[in-house]
Image 1 (cartoon, rainbow over the protein chains, first blue to last red):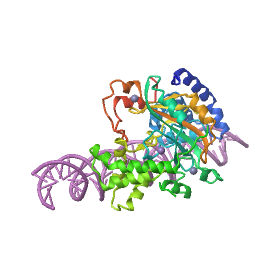
Image 2: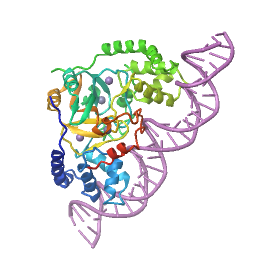
Image 3: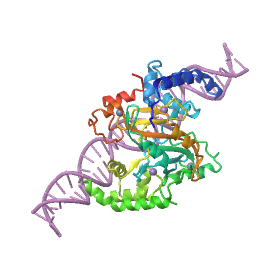
Image 4: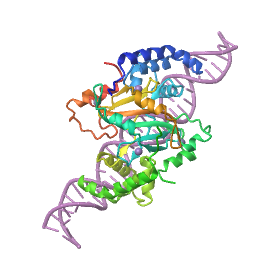
Length: 183
Length: 183
DNA sequence: GTTTAGATGATAATTACTATCATTCGATTC
DNA sequence: GAATCGAATGATAGTAATTATCATCTAAAC
Ligand SMILES: [Mn+2]
Ligand SMILES: [Mn+2]
Ligand SMILES: [Zn+2]
Ligand SMILES: [Zn+2]
């Protein structure tokens, strides 16, 4: 199979549609439509680069020279919470190490960040067969499956954590998941 | 298809084999076999948790109370460099945001961290059909395809960066990839 | 226009590394 | 087994990327 990058045209069309509906979606979600929020979502949607917060900051600063970097961080986080944006990986805040260097994939609990190995021959085969995508030379791949672990799925309304850095840390479940040891 | 977690038995067997060959592999790679390195790889291979550096530190400290956290960070990094360990994601050092909230996947350049969208219907279909893996309830997924972008693939021996946090930053290529703007 | 809950800006604090450097030690050589 | 020496380690300072705090401001409702 021949995999393709998403074209800039498709991306831009999608972005334009999202942007048009943004204010309405904010109001529906009970969020104020501020110039800062508009500028930030516009910057994010204008880029195919999956930018970092500091990059968004630099972009937005041209139109809003007084905006605070903290506002950019906060707003991007808020956008993720209301489903207007996402992070490319949910494991961006600290390195998780793996002694298994064979190709494999991971299930990650979105609440406690417990990670377990999965093997998915179909996906691995598909990707092994694919040596390039667009003009990128493929080296390998890793699938991150978002899930709820048994502990977090069972009566999950405790701690509707916002998944901010550290916001879920310190709970019994969390610390168990962070010991790194077998039961 | 019924996806399964990798069983603890299989994991432990693999870990035992890796550990047995570790000293030899170090020597072959020109690395000294120190008690700290042995303790760290043993801790990593004893866990199915994909632990963070601080978790490894706590585990190792029981046997080596004088070990430094810096040594743990350094050693884990070294282990990754010689292929004895890996990180679960290569995007762990800062958040990358995405305004495209439809399910899709990403190609990531391992050198400059440029990220582009990819759609892979086969993978998405496979995962959509799968509601649980072991006792984890699946919510979604995201495939991270490691690759070389056109810019980095063309005469790539410049900066054989060790992929440490920031070690590749500041290059022309890198800063271009971090502007988040279209050409 | 007034009210007010939520948003912002300035800035301090925190987390997770990363760099520096004096000291120690594993491996090789004798 | 002792000498040698460059790599490895520990202690600690420094940095980057958030995250928290709080006084001030403002969008939205009335
Ligand atoms: Mn793994
Ligand atoms: Mn994307
Ligand atoms: Zn969980
Ligand atoms: Zn690149």
